[in-house]
Amino acid sequence: MPIQLYNSLTRRKEEFVPIDPQNVRMYVCGPTVYDLAHIGNARAVVVFDQLYRLLRHTYGEGHVTYVRNITDIDDKIIDAARANGEPIDALTRRTTDLFHQDMAALGALPPSLEPRCTAHVPQMIAMIEQLIATQHAYAAEGHVLFAVGSWPRYGRLSRRSRQELLAGARVEVAPYKRDPGDFVLWKPSTPDQPGWDSPWGRGRPGWHIECSAMSEAHLGPHFDIHGGGLDLIFPHHENELAQSESAHGGEKFVNFWVHNGFLSVDQTKMSKSLGNFVTARELLQHDVPGEVIRLALLSTHYRDPLDWTEAKLEQAEQAVFRFYVALNRGKPLAIDLSPGPPAVVLEALQDDLNTPLALTHLYELAHSINRSHEQGDAAGRSRDQAALAAGGRLLGLLGRTPEEYLKGAQASDAALIDSRIAARAQARKEHRFADADKIRAELLATGIVLEDRPDGTTDWRRA
RNA sequence: GGCCGGAUGGCAGAGUGGCUAUGCAACGGACUGCAAAUCCGUCCACAGCGGUUCGAUUCCGCUUCCGGCCUCCA
Image: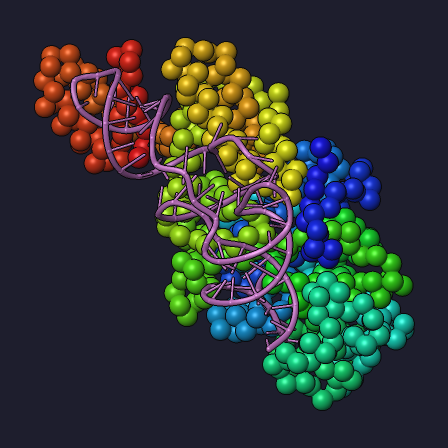
C-alpha cells in the first residue's frame, strides 16, 4: 500500500510518490534557539520524526534526507541574549544542546542535516540578489522587500486573497513598502545587533528567506515534503513558497505541504503569562519517561488539535506500562525483530500517519500476548511479542528492555529487595500473613510493587 | 469581520452508508491467603434540526458550540 499524505496545498489526501525514490527529501522548520522546547514544539518534532521513520522504513534508511534547520538569527534571540546578559552564540549553542537532549529523550532521531542560519547567510544574500534581478524584490532604506504583487500565485497556500490580507492587517504598514503585503528579506542592523555585510549595507536576513535558502542549499530547488506547524502556513510558508518559486523561475518548490495541528494545555493556549507553559525538559525532570510523552503526543492524529492534560499523560504512562508487561511475559531473553512491524500497524501509518490507530493495533497485540500467556501458548506469545516490539520500534517506542523499563536502570538496591522478598516468602510459607503484608507495604512505600506468580515466585517492579 | 478546521459512550480516541473500534475508568466474575498484573463478562456513543437513501454517526443543507490563522508563535 502506498503512503497517503494530506497535502495542505490541495486540501486532500494524496498518494505520496517521491521525486526520486533513491533520495526522498523532506524539510521541516526547526526551532528558534532562544529558549527551552515546549510540549507544542515537541509535538511537531515527534510528528515529523514519525513521518521520517515511516519514509525510512519504506524507502530505506539511506534513501531519505531529512533537513531540519536551526534558526539562530532572530530578533527574539537578540532580545533573550540581552535579557540574560549572555553572548548570542553562547545562548544559541546552549539552547541547541538542550533541544537536542530533549528531543532525543522523546525518541526523535537526529535529522540527516541540521543547517544553521548563521552558516548560510551568503546563500540568502545570493537568493535575495536573484529576486531583485528578476523584479520580485526591491531595496528601500536599507531593507530589501519581496514584492507580493510580482507573484500572482501569492496566497494560494493559505487560501487568502490580497484583499483579505489587507482587510485583516493589524500591523502598521512601514512607509517604505510599495504594497502593504510586502515582507522583509533583509533588514539593517544597528552596530549592537548582529549583522553581515551585504550589497544593501550591514544587516541580517528576514525569517522567511532563511528557510528558502537552506532548503535549496541542501535539497535543491524542488523537493518532496515541507513540514511545520499549522500556524506557519501564513505567513511563513506562503512567503517561502513565493520566494523560492519566483527565485527559481516559477519552478515547483514542494510537492507536499504537511502541517501538524496545534497543542493546547487544559484547553488553553500555552503562554508564559498564564503559567501553563509546559516544557519537555520539565516533564523529563519529573521522571516522566520520554516514550510516555511521545506516546501521549502520538495518541491524537497529527492534524487534529491535541489538548495536553495530566489525565492524558497518565493514560500514556499506563499504556507504555501495559506494553512492557506484555513484552515481559515469559521473560524472553531477546525478541526477534526480523519479521518487522505488523501489516496493520504499517497500514495505519501509511494512511496519513494514523498513529492512534497504529497504537490501537499495539494494544490488541498486548492483549493477545497476555491471553496466549495465560493459555500456555508460548509460540503465539513469542510471535505477538515480536510484532509488538517491531511495531513499537516503528513508532519510536518500546526500544528498551522490559527489565530496564519496569525495574529502572539503576539496580543498586536489587539485592536488598531480593532479600526482603525472601523474608516475605518465608513468612507466607509459615502463614504469618501480617508479617508478609508488612514487608510488602514497606517496599511499596519505597516505590516497589510486588507481584506473586502462580509458580510461587515473586517478581517486582517500580511503581 | 474574512478564511479554515472540529463536535463520537464517564474520559481519551479511531473508523464506517447497513456488521463489537481500541485504551482508561466503573461494575460483576476468575486467579490470589490478601494483593498486583492478567483474563472473562457488563456498560454499546456518534451536538441539534431538516434532506438524500430501502437504510446515515458516516453524504448534503441549516443551527448551536469549540478551536486555529489573518505579517515573523510548532
